[in-house]
Length: 151
Image (cartoon, rainbow, N blue to C red):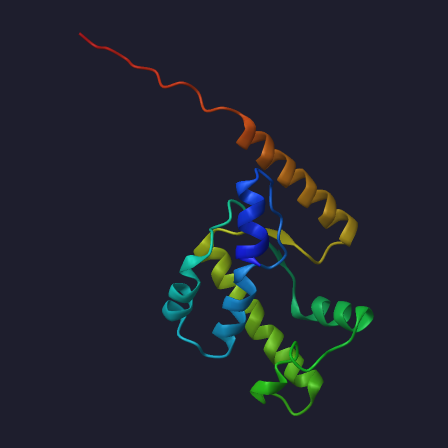
């Protein structure tokens, strides 16, 4: 994705919005016990985003939304880790561990944290506002340096 989509788009002057990017793989690897410095080194080739949003949610709200939307699957439940007696318990344990990984990465990488317990429309509005403000600021040219001479 990076080589075939993101880099060409950036070179062409486009703004790239991506859902998840490298941070999902990093969090999933962390939950599976892969050495964090090794993971960071592995993904060191990736372009660092200018802006990252972390939609922080609590376990209870996450479970309710997943059950309402699509249900639990084998991989999102961490069934390969054998951390629960059934898919529900495994899902809870795996997602709880993922939430901790994301919270840690939010601090490490300076994610902008949004409360994802709110209605989707409210979150969408806030994302749009923050992205628009970021883009407006990015388009504003930096002030010319001022040389001050003291005698």
